[in-house]
Image (cartoon, rainbow, N blue to C red; front, side):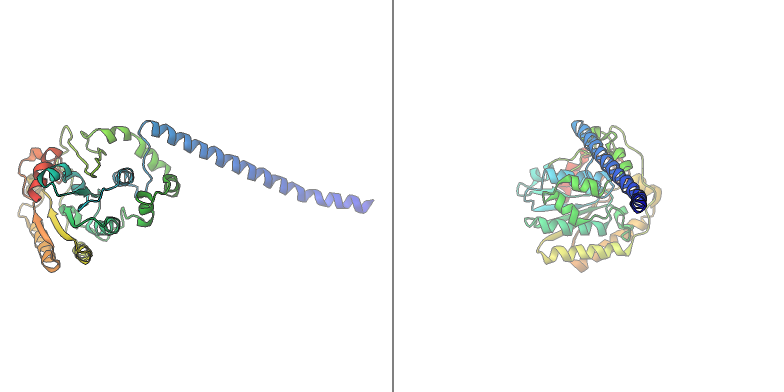
Length: 323
């Protein structure tokens, strides 16, 4: 009898930890279910108000929103691929291009904030998906040649490709890249940005990938002085030329308009701009690129939103000029 009692007393301490562990697991499971339900409810609420942000591939809302539009309205066998930073996105007017030349089928793949090396990788990805492209046009500002060592806004193209072209569920990437602070920040005011081309942060994007911006006022120079140009950017430009050449596509590089007041303020002797022009010309001669210098093509400050961005109302003229 004493042995039996001893066995029962010895077993009871082992039962308690198991009981607490089961409770802990159940509590964790309930918490996970509640959290998932809250996330789904929040997403449904935001979606109903056109304010659900896209998955945060880059943590830049203008890049992530452009990828969402590419997923929902895929490029339709374009023969002209426009690439670059926000000056490509904001400046190329596809409707004006097609009115000028009916044989053109453009797609504007400009992603805001991308330096030349990042644009090269974006172009490599898209050319692998768009075999109809015969001509690539890079639109760039002087700022795009300043830092090609930065990893900012670099994309995981395996994930991006599966999301844009592969039909993968968006939820997979919401969970993989989720940042609650950025998510809520992006949701704030998003519906208005998707519908109003009259704001500086507008996210209106048409089926050709263009991003019209016609704000009610300008925002001054906005950008500070031009920095020095990074040799790595010209190496990346050479890689882009090699990429397009190997696939039988032609490549234009367009230096887009900059505000005369900005030049007068930060580069009155045009030393920085002159060095940039010379560097692009040398790279063009080496690589068979056609260089189109449009930096001083617009002299009316009323046509600029800031130092490097034109108003949408000026983009038809700009597009016709480069074509």
